[in-house]
Structures are given as C-alpha cells and as structure tokens.
Length: 97
Image (cartoon, rainbow, N blue to C red; front, side, top):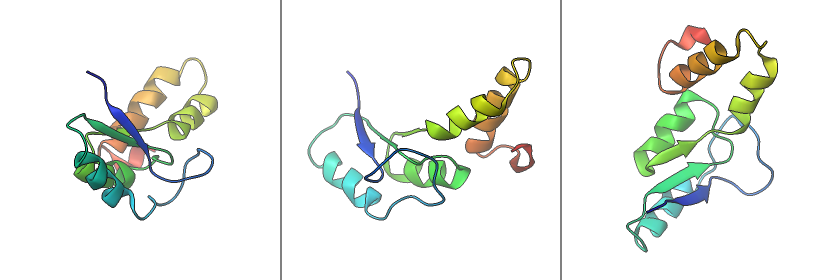
C-alpha cells in the first residue's frame, strides 16, 4: 500500500531544535487529497518533535539524529545506544540521552 513522505522543512537534512511552521497545514492538505498514510521527516530528532508530528501524521521519520547516535557509539554499545535513543524519542526515560 505504501505511504507518502512529507518533508518538514526545505533545505538540507539534519537535526534541528524545532519543527518548521506549516507542517501541520501541509499534512492536512495532503490528507484532503489521499487516504494513504503520511510520514513526516527532516529534522526530527527530539521527543517533542515526534510528539508534535504524531498529532498530525501517521509516522515520524528520524534520520540524522539516529545517524549521530550510531556515529558516537562503540561497536559494543551500538544496539543499546540505539535502543535508548528510540525509547527516549518515544517519551521514555529522558535522562537516558
């Protein structure tokens, strides 16, 4: 079935502090055109980003934030660090990141 991928801002990818204004409106306009699930990405790297996007879209896509965690982790810590990051994004233990 697939999904549509909406970018949350124009420009280069990478972690940011805020979600761009207008994303909620963009998702609403897309919903008026299709019944396909909508995923939003570009700059999603913090729990508050995931929570905001989750109010409007069906999925939040995290890229650069995850790449940063992977780049900092040692081989032995990689899976645990990724798991902690994903739990943190989902609203888990804020002290873990």
